[in-house]
Image (tube, rainbow, N blue to C red; front, side, top):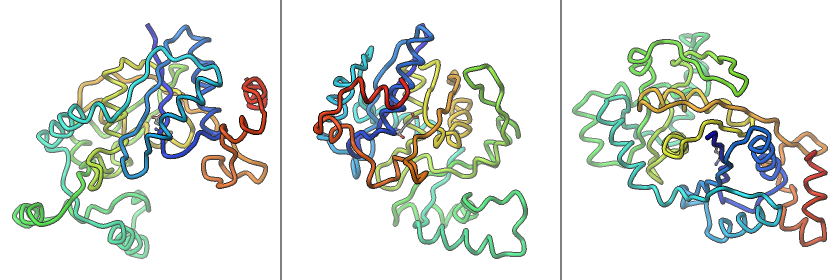
Length: 279
Ligand code: GLU
């Protein structure tokens, strides 16, 4: 059985951008005889609120979207911990003690440097903590909090320099493993990164097709690499367009973006919402 999911993060009320994504998942599932799951990505306890989780379930039911099952990332913390440990044991992660400020300063210095080469991307962590001597690293681990970063160079040697993910049309999308950079897999604050949890969930939930916004396209190579390291099957991916307002600002980013709740409260029907978004 084919299976897809809608995976909102309850950091606020659903707006039309989220609704467009949910309806795209629903339509795709219907057209492809696929089960649709709701996965509430509530891992970030600093930003997610139970009231938002309740409201989003209410909103989606009001819209008339039927989900085969509902799950919550908060209920899988032990599993994420196990997988994070597995990656640490594989020696594909290293602890990073840098603050956001330090990372920004290092990136800035790198971009100014004459040594900067074409394949050094500005958003890629320059690897400061990767270069720490073992003793220094161990000492810092006792004294400071830290994140776990993927050692892209080590991974590239392990799984090969080039990698591929497939879109829902079966078209291969090639990428260079080094280009994903030393992304954070274990966070300093909430322990698990979005990437880790999504990859684990897609695997254990048997997700065969991931339908999500274009904004997450750059995450797909990271997910593919984690799947390879962990021996998971890889879903096929479709990245749908993002809804913008008249000024061209993404609804997710626009403060003025109407929420589904406010539209409903002003008397707009679910049918009108669906129609206005082209469904
Ligand atoms: N929770 C993510 C978001 O709301 C989506 C995750 C995904 O579809 O992979 O942006």
